[in-house]
Picture 1 (cartoon, rainbow, N blue to C red):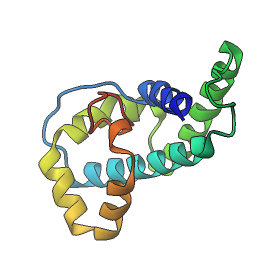
Picture 2 (picture 1 turned 135 degrees about the vertical axis):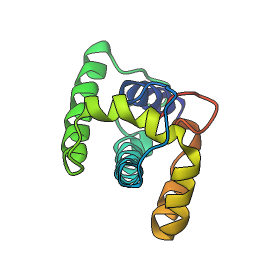
Picture 3 (picture 1 turned 90 degrees about the horizontal axis):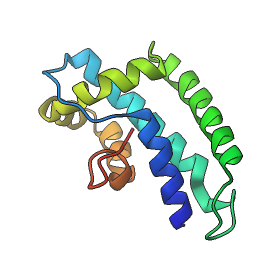
Picture 4 (picture 1 turned 180 degrees about the vertical axis):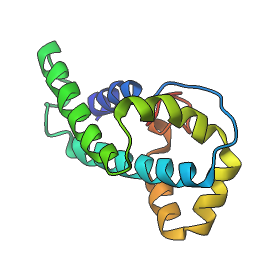
Length: 134
């Protein structure tokens, strides 16, 4: 389980970097919140059960590279639904999510999405203590 957390952390660190931004437009907030929810669910499913490696066993550097390529391909496809690239998402999401009031307002207006958003692992979403997230 600990290995899974490390892999998720590394993978998620690839996706986002921290940043400070300005007020985001409602359409941008909607797009990025929906993308974050789908990314979080995808990553949770990707590592669910820790079946890729035995407990306590670390993946080889080659396996880590393969996982990175696989994750980036899946992210690219997922983000394409929102007319975003992985690079666009990495660059803009810290700015969009820095407007916490806009994100909370959007989620409060869409309770179905709020439930999915709140169900994501907080410590790996950039909302917890790790500082990383998607």
